[in-house]
Length: 192
Image 1: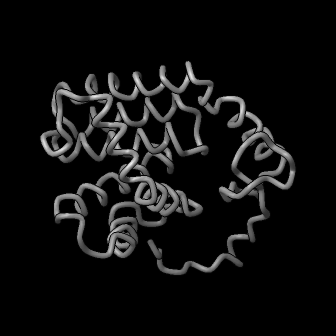
Image 2: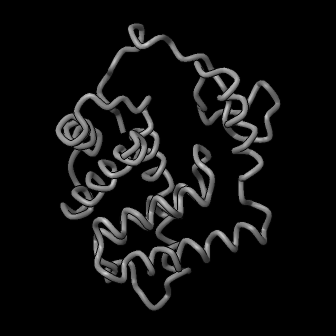
């Protein structure tokens, strides 16, 4: 299992816990605790925090997208695990720029196979596939943006996207900034 997949799994479990508890509690503390317990020693360069914080920032819009794409299923009637898998998938497809769209869909399907019911993966695939088609028709699928960022990262491995406008003129909303060496990186608590 790759580090990103493991971290995404822990993020899902944390979101499910938070959702199950009525969206109360310190989500950042829960994520830190779960990463320590469920993925000890795994370094994620802040991916889990960016994923969860980004989803929370766009939660209302993500939920509206799910409701629009699955109108027969009110959000509160979708199982908690499927709802949070869809939230992660919709967020990564619509707002995330760290992985290609088809990888986001595949990751969500794999989470649904691992944690959902028998039909969960088909349901998740249907909803996310519909969103992908909408994004493709509107020209909003960020494949080219991803490739440019990926190529930059492949050339300069000591950089990460920040989500700010790019000083390098990349056609993306991710800027590339130097990352301190592992010994220099402080590990502050997650603030969400």
